[in-house]
Length: 206
Image 1 (cartoon, rainbow, N blue to C red):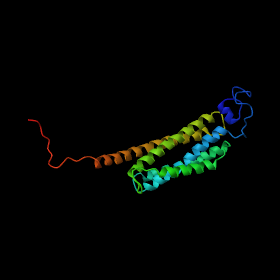
Image 2 (cartoon, rainbow, N blue to C red):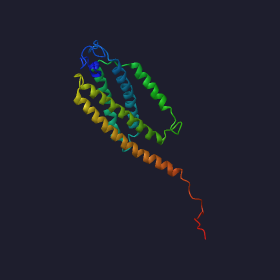
Image 3 (cartoon, helix red, strand yellow):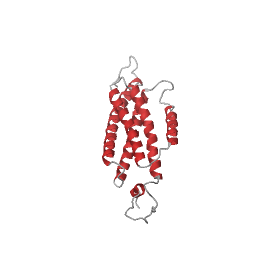
Image 4 (spheres, helix red, strand yellow):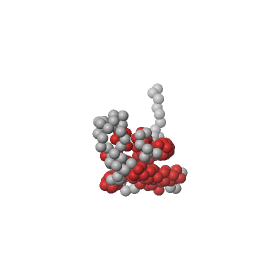
């Protein structure tokens, strides 16, 4: 039985006596997929909270409308993942979600150049983290799309839609990240540039 068959419960090209045995059925919980999808669900929870925080910080900037749409769509993507897990019989591991929240809180304590106030660097780091998270989500949709070839519980058209939306999200986040990186680091370089000393003139050897 091949890997897709092990998830779907169907006999694979090796027949019922294949490497993975004949006991897998659709009622069995797929152990590896359970770990994989719960890891992504934990990550999606952190992503939803992060994009909402970013959208709130930038609500009065020209990034505001675009971030509000991203926050809505990313929350919908998390709901889609939960539905897919339900359709595949994959249980939600609430402990993993709790641990993920604690890790997120610990990560927010990491210094970004300031201790008490928000640093401009936070904008760059948060957009960068959000972009990387969405790229991980896109990888998850691709993995499920590969499984959908042999499992009719998965809607290939829906997975294609989710993947296309994730790729659009990556492009949007990267555009905002690059803009803020340019603004933040250019301003930082200008602040720390050494001015010419008063009265100093260039002298040429005679």
